[in-house]
Length: 158
Image (cartoon, rainbow, N blue to C red; front, top):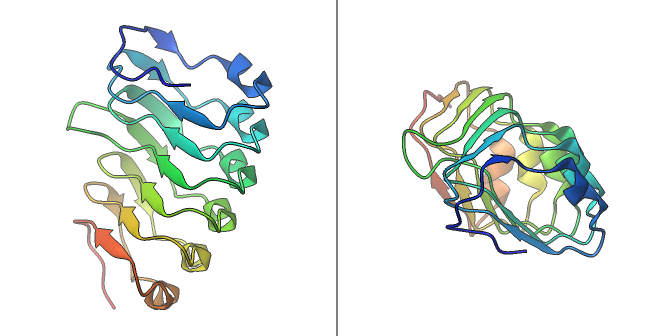
């Protein structure tokens, strides 16, 4: 379902979790979608792309997204400083998404450290986590991702 650049308002409907055949949810740059990512999206086990950057989303990243084991692209971050403001930590469950090649989490209010489980994403080529409030050391598990391009500007050591 491609709804990018539209004038939709409100929240992402929880009923999207009933669209079991949906493989692609692209709601980039709608600019007026608000609220949290519905946990019901975790039911869409055939989904390969979830892209919702450039909106006004808040709340945490649902751990249920770790159930989307066919996922290839997951882009949840902000396109600019006034967009998505996701909070909390990066769920360790994202490490279950072993088919992911792109993971975009930049420009939100994420805290904590990078989960070591991200090192399990052996196909990941692009990881964006800049402009958050992440701290700590870079997990040594990320060294195993030889084709990975990292994008971040947060306090790390190690």
